[in-house]
Amino acid sequence: MSQNQKALFIIFGGTGDLAYRKLYPALYKLYKENYLNENFAVIGTARREWSDDYYQEIVTDAIDDIKVSDQHAEEFASHFRYQSHNVKDTENYRTLLHLANTLDEEYEIGGNRVFYLSMSPSFFGTITSHLREEGLVTENGFNRVIIEKPFGTEYENSNELNNEILESFDEEQIYRIDHYLGKEMVQSLMTLRFGNPLIKHLWNQKFISNMQVTLAEDIGVEDRGAYYEQSGALRDMGQNHILQIVSLLLMDEPQSYHSEDVTKEKVNALKNLKLLDSQNIKDKFVRGQYTTSPDAPGILDYLSENEVNEGSIVETFIAGKVESENEQWANTPVYIRTGKRMKGKSTRVDVVFKNDESSLFDADELSENVLTIHIGPTEGLALQLNSKQVGHVFNTEPISLDYQIENSIPDDYEKLILNALQGDKTSFVHWEEVAESWRYIDAIRTAWEADPSDLFKYPVNTNGPKEAYELLEKENHHWFWE
Ligand code: BG6
Image (cartoon, rainbow, N blue to C red):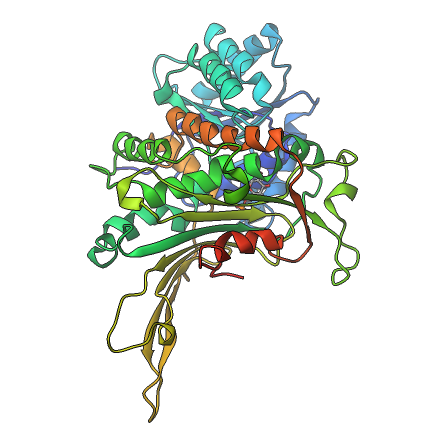
């Protein structure tokens, strides 16, 4: 079977940062690998007045580091056209239709269309209804809408947003991106859990003491102050990336690898999360905001970042104890944390196993067995075990079995776009997952809003406020990555 995919991409937000940094390089890599060759075209749209030539220059510039040769980059960019577009103007969709049909014919695309919505969600409904009404949805090929986050800011408005889109496209046609689902080791979680008897049979509360999901970033909010003021860490990373990972850690084994079966189990896992309320939020969740540190001169505190409101109480760090109602996870929490301006960039899951009663060893002689899944910036696995110290004495010591992926790994967006072209939804987020995640996050948000007093400051280049450590210490646990 030929791997060549035929598609016309219409990118709303074609002049944006995401398109430049992620989409054009991802499309180029697919072109290099022959997943896209002759039968594809891209229409970039946005409000700005750009010419096709200028747009092609921008695209070429976006792939400068990864191009095979100038000529190859130019051939790729020649598939791109630009249309200045006001998403509310019906006339603009007619021009777009004409251009789309012309390109469809020129590149023999056969009616396959991918509408990529990389702009404010407030326009999603307007765009999708115009696409349908003005005939941009074809009869002879597939029509898929890829949607970028944020998908609303709470359950209510994300539900409205979803209903607006559903008036023009079916759930089957909607591909909600969470780029973490394109990460190699996140995709590997199911294989790791269900493909290894050694792990599969121990993956429950009987053997696992706790799991720790860390999404630490060393960068600050950069030039996204205005967006971040509306989101904070809870919505920016918690509702999507963290809960997606949590659902993959806690879900039961799906019947098959098909997206419907996988979604079903992920949704169940999310439904089973114990909701928090103003009574228990203080015990179970911590929020923080970064401030300056004498050890890091020149690094601003959050309040001094561009477009951040004076006296803002938006959190740039969260840590929390996530629990499941599912019996097989009774008393086995998943501790989560994420933050900006932490010690380093590290995305990882640490699965801490229970120490066994042993007549041979005292409890303090043995370290915990810990399976670490390194999601980024390096990808791999590590397993901490106890071994005999080498030499004449008979002491125990922890050793680590390490595996690091050395092959080059396709980029998150490259994988996800290819999956969307192939119609494989396993690594996309179903509406029910979005809905359940918002329910969980909204409960925390509401409890925090009722009592805004406990926002703890943490110095930049640290792993959050001391309260985030106490959260585990009071239960005789500790963060494995410090
Ligand atoms: C995005 C968030 O979804 O993920 C950003 O909006 C964050 O704030 C980014 O920096 C982190 O992604 P990655 O792939 O660099 O871990």
